[in-house]
Image (tube, rainbow, N blue to C red; front, top):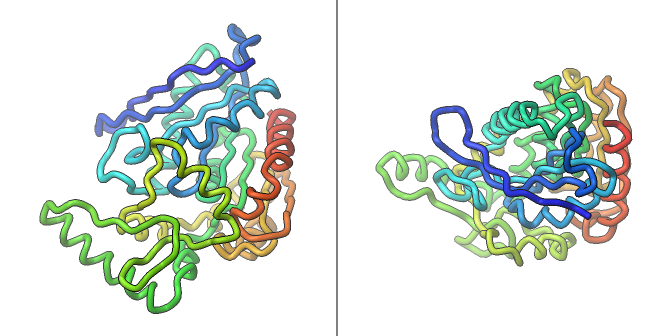
Length: 298
C-alpha cells in the first residue's frame, strides 16, 4: 500500500511562489526515514500525469516526490506555461534542501529520476549538487541548441522571429505569447513536437485536468540555453541512462557522447525506436528496471 500526502513548498527566493505536488510513501514505513526519488516528467507534462508511476518506487521501499514546476500545473508563478530548465533546477535544489530537513526522509539517500527534459534536469542537478546520490535519466535532451533541429528551416525562422517580438510585447505589459506543444504543424500555427511515434504516450498527459497543450514562446529561448553536456565530468553519483536508439527529438548521439564522458559509476540501456515511442512500447519494463536500480543504488 502507498500513502500519499499533499506537498507544498514555498521557494525561498523572495518570489513567494509555492510549488505543489504529492509525496508518496510505503504505508508500512510511515515512521521510518526513507530514501527518496524525486520524479520529473517531460516538457509540458504535469505532475498528476506522473502520479501513477509512484507505486513502482514505493513498492521498492522508496519515498517518491512528484511536483509541478513553477508556472505550470497546480504550482504558482507567471507567465503560465513557461518552462525554464535552469530555474527548474534551482528550484529542485531548494526542494532537496527542504527534504533534508524532514524527519521522514533520509538526507543521505536522495535520488533523481526524469524523462526527457526532466532527465536533463536530473543530470544537471546531479552535476551541481553532491547531495544527489543516484540519477536515472530517460531520453534526455542534453543540448538545448539541438531543439532548433526539431523544426524545418522555415518554421524555425518563424519561431525565432516570434521571440524578440514577444519580448517587446511582455515589456509593454502584454501577456506572454504561446504556441502549441503537441500536434500537427500548420502554416502560421507552429507546434513544438509532432512526434507521431510517441503520440500514444503523450496523449495520456492530455487526459489530466492540469495539462495545457501550450508553452510560452519565451520557453524556446530558455530551452536553447540548456547545455547539460558541459557538466558531464562533474557528475559523481551513479547514473543510469535510458535512450531511444532512433531519437531525433533528444538526439541520441549527443546523449551517448555525454554518457561516454561521465566518469561516475554508470550504466546505459537503449530501446529501439523514437523518443516517446519507447515509452509507449516499453514503459512497464523501463519503470521496473529504473525503479529497481534506484532502490538498489540508494
